[in-house]
Length: 89
Image (cartoon, rainbow, N blue to C red; front, side):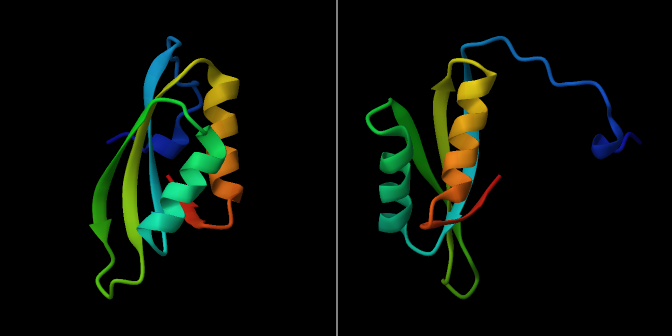
């Protein structure tokens, strides 16, 4: 069995391509505001993934077209740094 973290080769993507981020936040409205703050009016699809057992957190999937690696990484870092988002996967 191959352990993914032991791979040294870089994932090769052909841009532009569809990319998905899983976002975890405290509430849906705060997560939606964070997405708007980062990607503004870019076309995207936001779908509910699940709620935590105690209802404290919500996770959602953000799907959008990324134009290049810098664009993909910028969105990831901006979402990760946003105060309304707890985690980005």
